[in-house]
Image (tube, rainbow, N blue to C red):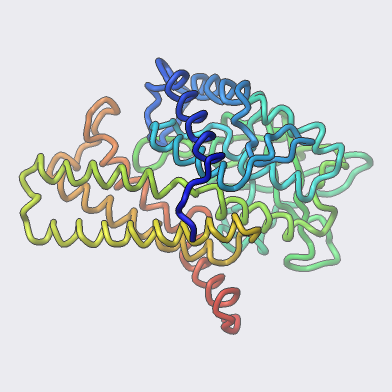
Length: 389
């Protein structure tokens, strides 16, 4: 790994930092860094997304013919680092820019690319991901939502769950069964469906922390155009795995920086509570710091591979498995440091609210974006070459 920053990267870093200093102000700054999103702040998040779009910060690595800046992986990392260091708010357009956009660039038709990529880059249209179902959370090959071709339209019936931001999105990319004569993976297609129609019902779900950022989505005769299958009929598994590769690859490159800032706040909390000299607390802090460094070095190794032209692989599952348990343990430490204060839900303007939110929300880390059990299967089969089991 070469840690020497080129003059081009240094100039790009200065450009990013200068822009963020000038524009991440006022209502945008007030959003904070929490993953909590709701109807009360969604309009502000949309305005921030549009601000980023006007300045050309969306679709950084997309090819120029698709409206991107054709930035290098190094420049993408620089932007992610500076955004995290500036305490940039959680992105409202993550599913469109980070997941669907690269999927359409790789697998989509020219018509799909022309229709859907520009609104993503402008911050005008928002997407959600329709993969998981009540009976097929991590085992996506078992999804039961069906799509039947009826003339020039698909008719869709079924249910999705844990669909983040569905109540705010205009579109959803849905993994569903289209090939009746096929089984498992070969029966699946990846279809783009408009949400604002009579055949789609979105029901927000409230989690332990009191938020409703994810939802159930019901399809009852929902329709979408026949040509909105991405990657071709029966190729939904390949397309979906491409989407998940983008999610577990470069999409979370700056996550370790946010974790590092959170860890620094936990150390301050320990001092404030007079527990920074407690042997058990010191041991837990030491473990958290050591594992944070493991994440940093592992992340740098992955970034080096991307810079050298590699693609996201099963190694991403190692990272996901590692950080999800790490953040759960950090949340448990935060709750223990808060003591009795952690037993009552604190208001969002309380300084300790974010600690409480980490503890509550991190319980889902080992489930969403692929459960820990599935990550272990991927690591065993695809990274270690073990037999399926």
